[in-house]
Picture 1 (cartoon, rainbow, N blue to C red):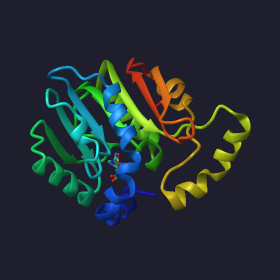
Picture 2 (tube, helix red, strand yellow; picture 1 turned 120 degrees about the horizontal axis):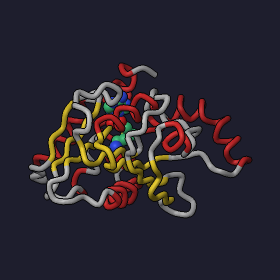
Picture 3 (spheres, rainbow, N blue to C red; picture 1 turned 180 degrees about the vertical axis):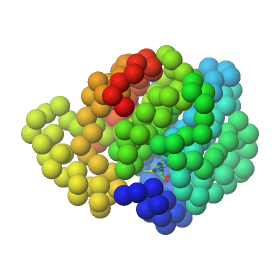
Picture 4 (cartoon, rainbow, N blue to C red; picture 1 turned 60 degrees about the horizontal axis):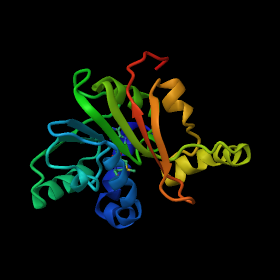
Length: 211
Ligand SMILES: C[S@@+](CC[C@H](N)C(=O)[O-])C[C@H]1O[C@@H](n2cnc3c(N)ncnc32)[C@H](O)[C@@H]1O
C-alpha cells in the first residue's frame, strides 16, 4: 500500500475508529505512556496519532506533537484537544517516513499500533531514531513475532493476508528494532498473557545501522 492508499483507508475509518479501536486498545496506550517516564518540559512526539486516543494520557507538564497522514483522523484528534483543553499538545499532518523536524528534536518518541500497520516500517523507524535525541526513549505498542518457531512460521505465512485484509503485518521480529535499528531494549511486556500486543521501551543509542 502506498501513502495515498493509507490516507484513504484511514480517512474512511475516521468516523468509526474510536468505536472499533478505542476501549480495546486503551490499556496499551495508557501503560506505554507511563513507560515514557516523562519529566517536566520534555518534548514528546507521537507518530501516527490517529484520532488522538492517547492524547489525554500525556501529562500537562510536557510538550507533545502528534503527527499523522490522515486529515480526517487528525480532525478528530483536534476535537479532543479542544474539548479537553489539552493546550500542551499540537498536531500536524506529516508523513512519518519524511518528517519535517530537525535531528534530535524530541526527548521521547512514541508510536501505538503503528509500526506494523505502515507500508514502510523501516522508513518510519529511521525517522523516529533521527528526530529523537541520543539516549532519548522510543516506546512502541506493537505486535512482534513469537520466539516459538512453530508460532513464528504461522505468523510469517499469514502476514500477507493480515496486511491486505486487516491492515497490519504479523512478521516483524523484535530484532528489527534492536539489531537492525540499533536501539537498546530496556523493557518489553505483553499487555496480557494472551494479547497479541506488547509494549517495548528502547533507548536511542543513535548507532548508525543499515537503515
Ligand atoms: C492503526 S492507526 C493507530 C492510531 C493511534 N496510534 C491509536 O493508538 O489508535 C495507524 C495510524 O497511523 C497513520 N499512518 C499510517 N501511515 C502513516 C505515515 N506514513 N505517516 C503518518 N501517519 C501514518 C494512519 O493514518 C493512522 O491514523
